[in-house]
Image 1 (spheres, rainbow, N blue to C red):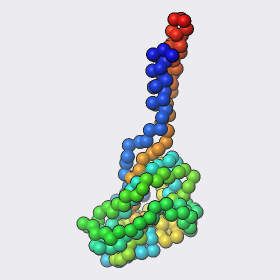
Image 2: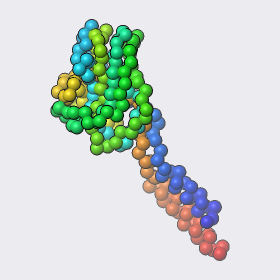
Image 3: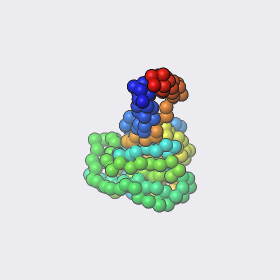
Image 4: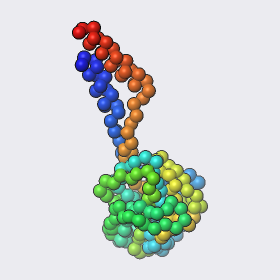
Length: 209
């Protein structure tokens, strides 16, 4: 194989390999209420029943951190990431993917993030990110999305949950940290260029022989 043909093969391998996008924190914000508000103070406001956000993904995403926006003083916070049976109406948790808990104190309304072992979310599966808070919060922040699901980046069917139901007109502030893990396709122009180099290298090899 000539040097040019070898270079073409290397370029093809490099550009076709799986290349995750840059790590990014995704905050889930409904488009019909991008600011949200404090709805109540000094009350659990349903968080003891478990509040969360359901979603699915259009591409594989590797997740390593789960977060909720809250104002707490010495309160136990439990989290869970689940596979669920449905993306609307009532649902059941079919598998617990990640879970844990910790006693949390924040400086006013702030993000509470939990690092988790990396997990790949797959298209075609419904997921639930859920938090349960074991006592009255100083402030409770919600977006009023009116129970209207939305899409954001590779996440679809995003909607708030309370307990085992999507029938809820508000959604808490949630986020996760993750990488898209889809394969990066070779651009059409680069395909032609690499092919031309390969053909040219093969032709030169024949002439030399």
